[in-house]
Image 1 (tube, one colour):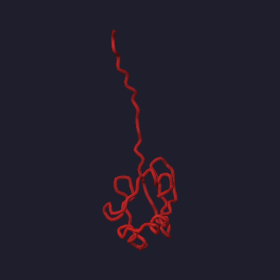
Image 2 (tube, rainbow, N blue to C red):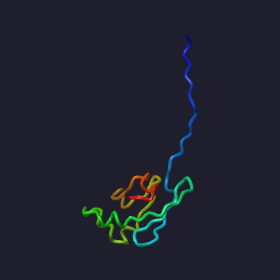
Image 3 (cartoon, one colour):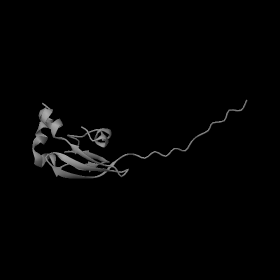
Image 4 (tube, rainbow, N blue to C red):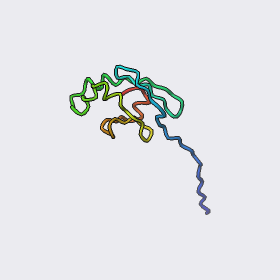
Length: 92
């Protein structure tokens, strides 16, 4: 009996955030690498948190200073970051 291994060449695309724009009132418009755009409201998450390291981002100036690092939104060197799947779904 001859055993044959078959490999299927599957190309996967890593979902990334290409750009993001702060709209105001803790809302960010996020542009993903697959062409999808989401409007994400972070305010309910920030207001419901009791943790001081999260609540400090209720300072709108601090919140608006996110950067895109390795395809994800990042605040202050990974001080605040969200799963990209949640952002893609438009929820946090």
